[in-house]
Image (cartoon, rainbow, N blue to C red; front, top):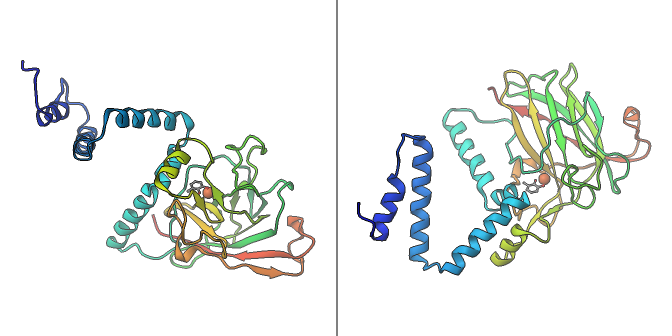
Length: 288
Ligand code: MBD
Ligand code: FE
């Protein structure tokens, strides 16, 4: 047994040490990441202080619950979408509503209703909107009983569940489309989102000289039997950050148009009385 080795020999030992087969895939991925990190530390001359500061930062990141923020902010979530889009294109699965990243703030199990819903609990200040349309397949046929989850931020850019000041499932609902594949919901137009001003993500972004803003958006998870589940978002036009999202998640085909509607006629069941903003939007699902 030889216990003195060069860095190359050390890397080789780390990457080949085993007393059992383990998991081949995990081994391959960790070998690659460890090799890249050895190289970074070596070539960029990372000091011990820098190395231990980085491990402290990682510990605080884990404890903060902000790992999902970092993966989005460093582009990994969008990368996975780009790779999936490329794979789909190769397989001839083009068309349909573009996918957009889920983000770290989805909560399953929102209250569910048929055809229509109100997302806000009446306490949110701002402009009332109704978003409505049809969920279709790529063949154009409406999908009855499709499931649509919608979620967005309140007027402070905060999401319920992660913000203790909001009631559970505020601004989160599930809707089951009607026999004609239609859905509609009422809510209040959200502002943009900004990462929490303190914490490990804010620290890294400050050190990188980056902002942590997302333009105003509404998230969706849409599914139907036999169809590919769609995770997407739409953006409200006119936002400062529409082409400068810290999560790189906005897409050209997903900026909605806003229509001013003067009369609440036909929208009484949503409790609408005065003028409101209408957002027409159809979701088009790929085959599974
Ligand atoms: C969000 O609201 C969001 O949608 C993403 C992707 C990241 C952080 C906050
Ligand atoms: Fe969001």
